[in-house]
Image (cartoon, rainbow, N blue to C red; front, side, top):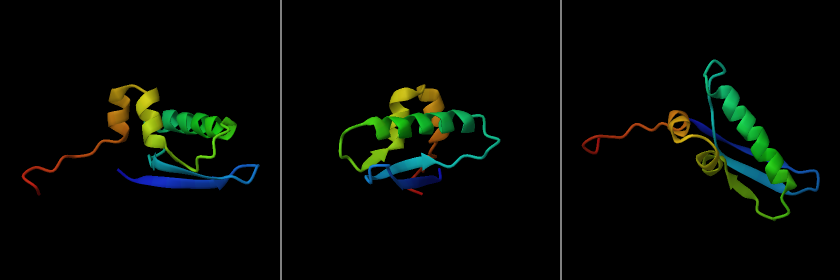
Length: 83
């Protein structure tokens, strides 16, 4: 799974970093849902009064969507026999 990090400054000058944002193709059925959740997550961060600078989008998705959808987004293939 390919992930990216988003960094930006809020209007108050606070630097914010969002980690582990999945990169999906636009024709993926989960692309729209992930973008909606990302927008909701960013607006939630901007409304918070805490001074935290790094947030994990993966943890946020783990708590807000169905587990089956989460596994489809962050699917990781297990290596067998230590290969």
